[in-house]
Length: 594
Image 1 (tube, rainbow, N blue to C red):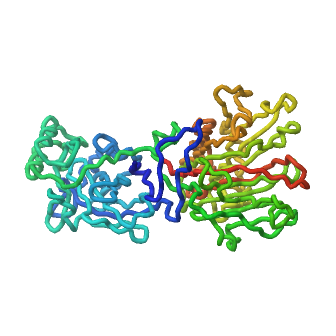
Image 2: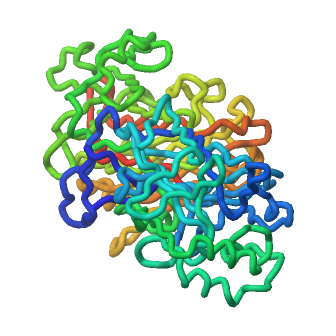
Image 3: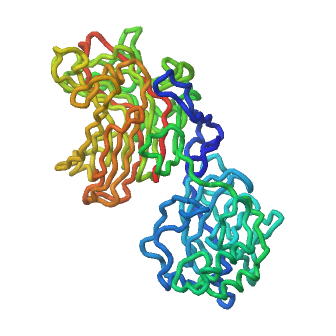
């Protein structure tokens, strides 16, 4: 099954359409290869519409724009197009003729990959735009549709060259397929006018249906309607003349259902939005990986990283990923302990579903109660970035995973497991003097209100912590309360004030799915950013008033980095015991959201 449009997957992916979170999980479902990421392609096209074309000037009339009739929001959300894109132009340009709808296909007759509505200008140029396409495509067929013209599609696939698609439809008839392509308009070619009713189940035809569609509207004026075939702001006899000249023509273009299908197994709250897969990895195709040993710090912690300024370690970087970092004291190259583990590994130790591989992160117990100890991160960059990203992954903690404050007295432990951020340069550096903001850090938070009444009085939450931009002055988002809690309720299991115990959630030895959406606010200082967190597809935390970008932050600080893992403050054994425990991550999926 192919998920069309904004969820088009590379052919190397295996996609399963169902799973059961309660029963034994299915095998891992995605494989990462070096060409897995989606590609942003800049589009430059030209096309003419017969209805608006003026042969005396060899350009198109802008009467709809002059009359103020062109909508600011793209008009193709109606049947039959059912295109739900949110393209909007606040101030319509003076030379705009109308909106057109572009589709991108793998072949002439199948494989609808993406669609985009764009502004058509009087000289025939379509305002340049960017589209997300699967990276394995070297070429693509491009189709142009209009509200009341027959469509056109390129007869041959257009090559993607240096990240761009360029084609001038005015210089060729286009694909005919036994029917009509475009109509010759003097020295140029243009889309054929008069196809006002495009609801036929198959094909595109200019026939009696179109005049029947026009007839009851004849005589209306100052109107934006498909029955206005010559696009002069009126429905009149002139439109009938234009239709009559083309009556009986039909297009050879195959009509496809290009409606958006959401990707499988996403949270309910996201199913009304448009998600584009931009990265996936189930680690099965990865070579085994274990971080090496860098130079010990003054506190005895050794670190190795593939990051800005530390490029030497990048030779071992896992395929598809861009950065990693580790900080540990019990690396096998440091201590004489046969059971010592590198902090960051990819192997078949604990794959989801029982076969394949996963990412393993080892937590070391050292330092003081308040110290953030061992650290392990694996990250992906997305440049130039996105303003709205949803990331999800499956996570499993080893059986009998221990927390300091489930065994001693009152306190709070944190394990950072996922973060998203804008990165100025080094995606690992954090803090007010770091290079990453805005940022959201997802923690598994475990704390104890009353240790002596048993382990299930130890409460937990998925807590999203926001770091605002400009980071130098707003890193901790001073004065802000976004109302984020992350309480998790488990059906049939009593909690405390809405908070389940760790033992009944991540501590039950099963795989669990966590997800987070970060949508930047529309402008610095505006309280409309979105942050949402899910546990096994249950929404556990949500805010729509987040000011990721505070006043003074650059508007172009988009989300450019997603990192898995992080450090912990969990000292369950004295450092001399060299105690380590693990958790695993698998089946990572990252989407842009519209």
